[in-house]
Image (cartoon, rainbow, N blue to C red; front, side):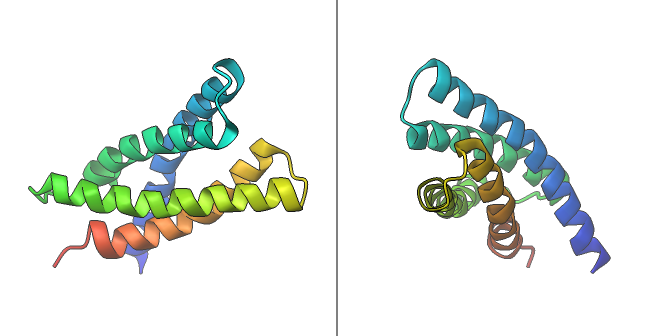
Length: 128
């Protein structure tokens, strides 16, 4: 159980770097490039997910699986489900609860991190 907790803490640490990338790209795309907020959110989320894959593979899970293409595909599949959840939560909070976009995004990330960790731990970086 301690090992799982340590992996989760590492996963969250990597996630903070992804958070900076995600918010930075989202802000640039939404505010400066005037992209639609959901397109900007998706772009930020996708770039952060790619960065997080490599950091989690090496540092969090110490994974040595040589089939990186299949593994990355699994990771992105999970990230896309996370992205759908992320956008749904943002939509509900912004349009139904009148939460500001960036607060809604932060809340969505806080919720989706649990999905991402559990799915990647059990599906992407599983050691047999």
